[in-house]
Length: 122
Image 1 (tube, rainbow, N blue to C red):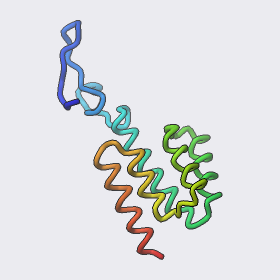
Image 2: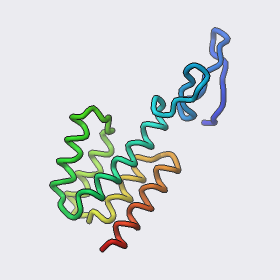
Image 3: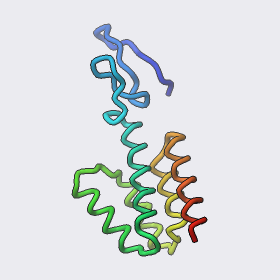
């Protein structure tokens, strides 16, 4: 799937979802799927950092973020649960969240950098 403008059936041109949603001539990344995924990957990394080594705090922060109206996909929550069940340390959880929630390269990089940073803090 490539970025770019594609003509619709009515002759209008729209941007593909992965490239952002064009509103009033401006690309609104937060309104696009790619932007949401990127923001979610950052949120996942922030949650992993703030929680330290307490697994319960990860779940609590995830629940709080969801209640506050932040849309976190099912696979992000599922990856947290899988990490808890499998006994994965939170050092690697940042990388897992970044990879699973970032099918854009930037989200993956944020996850890797966060995972390495948390590992260095130990």
